[in-house]
Image (tube, rainbow, N blue to C red; front, side, top):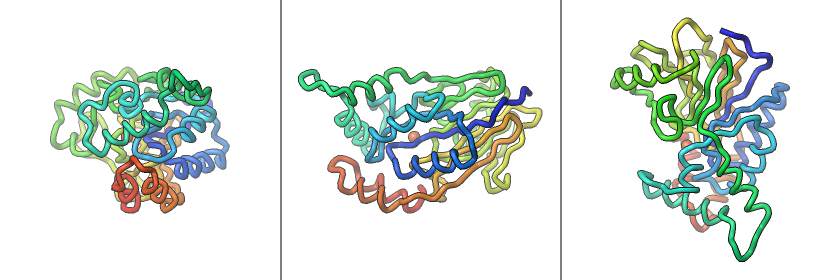
Length: 259
Ligand SMILES: [Fe+2]
């Protein structure tokens, strides 16, 4: 496998949580990493979609499209009521008004419109959800055991030996042909690329769901993917969600439990 010329940070599912995003960006900068790939869902659930878009558009080398980003522009089809309300909230905040043009709104709306579904280089590919359906399909921790044929098709859709994804907010690695999901805890936080294809879920910056409340992301040097966990001011985010006047309180409360 070709070695990367420099390490890259892969972040996903920021979900409008600017406290978490700032903490992760500081952690990335402290390691001297300048190349950052954002796998999408920059908005949705959280109270600060504008600030999060501003930060990722300035700092990230690549920004990809997640299902929430897509839903804000189009339709929240298939979303549960809490997620749908969050999409409506973000759309109301971000959508430019014809009568009252605001350059900031226009720029952020254009950011959403220009998001691509896929990124690929000579070493790996990256998308929000799955190599087969880049924006919407879930690659679940239970799939290796419960749905191996689904995974067979997904691995067949890969054009590189390694794919980085987000979407489930649940970090871990799926290897082709194996019937287990490797959580970061059993990997001591590191996964070394081997001879089989691997799908690496980088976890979520703004809404982790693996019962670890800290932000999660990955640093990859071409050979080893290292999970990073970063603490941030959770209570500040919860307070802003509670006072948002549009987001469901559960969007904040779940941050306290990482679920
Ligand atoms: Fe998400």
